[in-house]
Image (cartoon, rainbow, N blue to C red; front, top):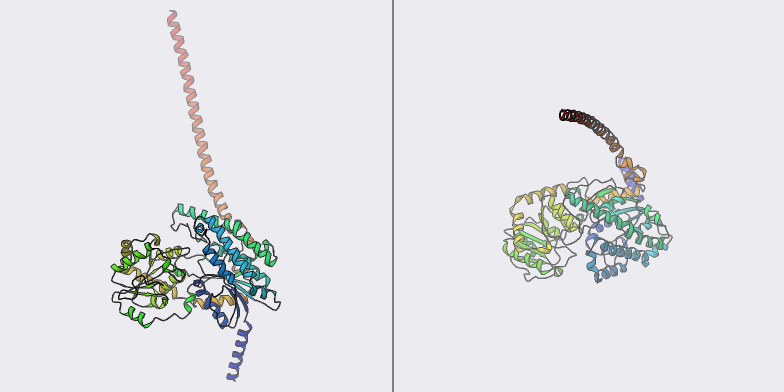
Length: 540
C-alpha cells in the first residue's frame, strides 16, 4: 500500500514537472565570450529541467549546447568587425553624445541583423511555432521586445553587466539617483557634492540620449518588422517579469531592489572549473614565497597592451620574490622559468583557489572579480575599459583591493603597492571574510535563477512585483504630501517669527522716527527762541 502510494506521488510529481516544461526563446547577441559564461549554465540548466530552448546568437558564440536549437546570425559577427574597423572608432571615446550616437547605430544594427536573419524570419513565419518565454539581455535592444508581443510570451531579462538606471526602469524600480550610469566613461566615483552634481548631469544626459537617440532608432526597426507603433514599444518596456542581475550585495554597492530584480552573481561558478596541468600545479606547489597571478581577461590580448604597461610589470616582478603566473598569448621574453609561468589559456578558478596564490592582478572584468571574491584572494586592479572601473572601485571600498592607473604605470609605485597588499594581512583577512558572505546563500545562484525563471512562467503577470509610477500619484510617490505638510508647519512658524520680528522692527523704527522728529522740533523751537533773543538784544 505504501509502495503504491509512493509510486502515485512520484508519478504526480513527474507529471507536474513535465507539465511545466516550456518553449523558451533566448536572444543573446554578445560578440564577446565573457557574457556567455553566465548565460551558458543557465541555458543548460533550463534544458535539464525539460524546457525546450532556442537560442539566437552570433556565429560560433557560444559553442553548441546539447539540447538547444541554435539560430546563428553571422551578420552580428560582421557588424562587430565593422565597428572595430571603423576609422572613427576613437571618436567613441570623445564625448558622451558621440559615444551615444555610435552606440545607437551599433544597437540598431544588432536589432536589424537579428530580426532580418533567415532563421529568425523562418520561426516567425511558421504558424506552429509557439514560445512561452522570451529571455534576452536587458539593454537598449527595445525593438526585440516585440517578440514578447508577437508570441504573447513572458519577457525575462538578463543583465550580465552592472545594474543601472535603465535596468531599474525596465524592472519598475525607477527612482532618482546619481549612481550607476549605463556608461561609466567620465563618471565620477567619489562622493563629493561637486561629483554628485556632475553625475546627476551625466545621468540626465544618458536619459536624454535614451529618449532622443537610442529609442527612435529602435522604433524604426520595431515598426519595420512588427508593424507596431512606438507607443507599443514603450508599453513593452514595462513588460519584464523578472530581471536576473549578475551581481550580489556582498560585493559592495548595496542597492534597493524591487522583488523582481534577482541577484545571481556567481552563476557561472556552477560550471566545473578547468583543472591545472601537472606542470602548472608543480609550479604553484613549489612556490616558497607564494604566487602572483596576472590576467587581463579573455577579451584583451597582451599584444595590444602598450609597452609602458608591460615593461613596468616585468620590472616590478623582477624585484619581488614571489613567482608569477601570467596569462598571455605571448612569451614576453620570460616564458616558463623558476620565476615566470606564461600560459595562454589559464585555468583561472583553479589558480585562484590554490593556497599559494596570494594576489590577483586583474583588469577588473565582472566575472574575474567574482572569481577572486569567491576564492578569497586580494586584488590589484588595472582597469582599462567600461564597467571595470566601478567594479574595482566597489572592491576597493571593501578593503580587499588596490587600484592603479593602467595607462600611467610606474615600476616603483607598482612594486610598492604589491608589497603593501602582500605585507599587510588586512587585505587577505578582508578577502576571506568577503568570500564567506559571497558564498553564504539559501540557494546557489543557478538554483535561484532557475527558480525565478520558472516563477515567471507560472506567474506571467508580475505587476505585484513592480513599482508602477502611473498608479501612484507623484505627490505620494515622492512623499510630497509629508514634505508639503512639514513645509506648511515650518513655514507657518517661520512666517510668524518673521512677521512678529518685522512688526517689532517697524514699531521700533516708528518710535525712533517720532523721537527724532520730536528732537528736531525742539531744536527748531530752541533755535527760534535763540534768534528772537539775539534780535531783541541787538535792538537794545
